[in-house]
Image (cartoon, rainbow, N blue to C red; front, side, top):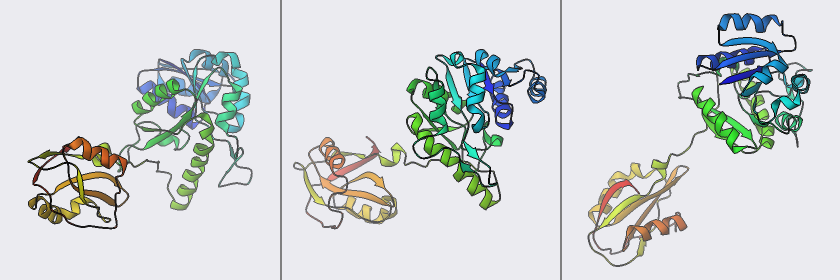
Length: 314
C-alpha cells in the first residue's frame, strides 16, 4: 500500500516509520519539495520512503495521513488539492490546539464543531477518520505498556473506512474503540487535552488510554441439566454484594440442597445469583435476559426438585 503523509513533524515521521516497518511505501509531504526534514527522513528510511510536496504526497497515497499542526490543516489541504482526495481515506491525526497563552493549550475549536468535522467539510469526497490524536508520537507504533496494548479511539462517518483504519491500528499494536461519526471528533480532541493535563500533573508523557470492559465469558450464563423437577418456578432472589466466586461455600451448600444456581450478567461490583427451578435452560435464560436483577432485596429459600449443574458458557 502507498501512504501519503502531509506533515514533516514528529507525528508524521513516526507514523511514516511505522508504515514502512509494516512493508508499505511512504511519501512525506511538505509545502516545499526541498524540505530538509522530509529529505533527511527519506534518506534514513531507505528505498520505501520518499519526499515531496503536499500535492505529491496526497496523489501518491492510497491512504493519506493528515499530520500537520491543527491550525495549518486548511492551508495544507488546499495546497494538496481538494480533488486529490476523491474517494480516499484520510486519517486525521490533528488537534486544533491554541498555545497562545502557553501551556497547557486550549482547544481553538470546541462546542458544536471540531477540527475533524472541518476537515470533512473541506474534503467532502474523502472518507475522514479521526485517529492517532490521543497519544504522543513516541507510542504511536507498537506501544508497550505494563497493562497491555492501549486503545485508540476513532471517529468517522464511513464504517468501511473505519474498518480499514482499525486494521491499520491493530497492525500498529492498538486496540480500537469506535465512538461514532466524525462529530465525535469533538470529544476525541478534548481527550487530547486530558492526556496533556494528566502528563503535566504526573510529570511523565509515557501514558495512553485504555477502555476496560467485561468480557463475554464474564457475562455469560451457565448451562444446567435437569435431574427431575416441575416447570419454571423462581424460588429465591439475588445477592447484592461481591462477585459470585467469593461465595463458593454458600453456593456449595445450595448445590448440596438441590438448588440450581445460574450466574447472570455482572454489573459493577455485584453479581446476579439466580436460584431457581425450571423445565429447561431456555426458560431460565429468557427470564434472566428479561430481568437479570429480579428482587435483589430478598434471599429466601423454598423446596425445589433436585438438579445438577454443569459449568460452561451457553
